[in-house]
Amino acid sequence: MTATTPTTADTALRALELICSGDTGPAVEEVIHPDSVNHPQGRTRGGPDGFRDVVRWLTAAFAEISITPHEVITSGDKVVARTRFKALHVGPFHGIPPTNRTIEFEQIQVWRLQDGLIAEHWACMDEVTALRQMGVVLPSRAEGVPESRSRRPMAARLSMYENVDLDLADQVQQWMEASETDPFGELPGYRGSMTLVDRDNARLVGIGFYASAGQAREADALLPALFEQALDRVPAAIAPALDMRPNSVGLYEIVHRD
Image 1 (cartoon, rainbow, N blue to C red):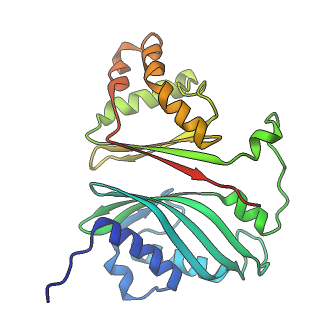
Image 2 (image 1 turned 180 degrees about the vertical axis):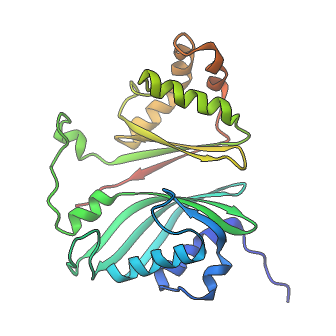
């Protein structure tokens, strides 16, 4: 009987299974690259031992861990998934004593694979909901933000770009920082963004956050006109960046549950 070679998605999701089972044994080397990085870099050790540290940290704080993947997107050596974390809070977590409460929140996870193993990992998670479920009293709204807006579900729009001119992308980022300009700032419900850069393979994953899925869809329809208007404002040297179009786009809703 011929063994089936795991796909990139299989390997990425296998990492979640190892966390849920608390497995820190030899199976970790079958999933995690020796030089893997768990971003932000420096927060934890790299490689299989760094992954084991994360497993031990989570299983010390939580029991009955389940991380359920919902939408899973694969593009080349990248895997993106919307997952739901659920567990019983039985140990200290970020200084919060155990509450024996069930904690449940949404995550967006991104993996990059190399040689069939996970070489990089990023995660965006709804920690506010987790903290509230642990009994942490947080402000009901940010200063200056209407309460009705702060309690609305958020949506994340993921755009994956292949064969990117990274020098040009760096110039765009430098211009935005120097001019304190965010070209997306006027889009409906826009809450900010983050960019994941795969320099080895000239790929970018752009994640834009919006107050609701409906506003993210509305913003999506407005983006072509926004790029046209931006041509008058951006320096000529970085104008070609406005012609970049994503190879794939996904819309994910992050639901906050108290």
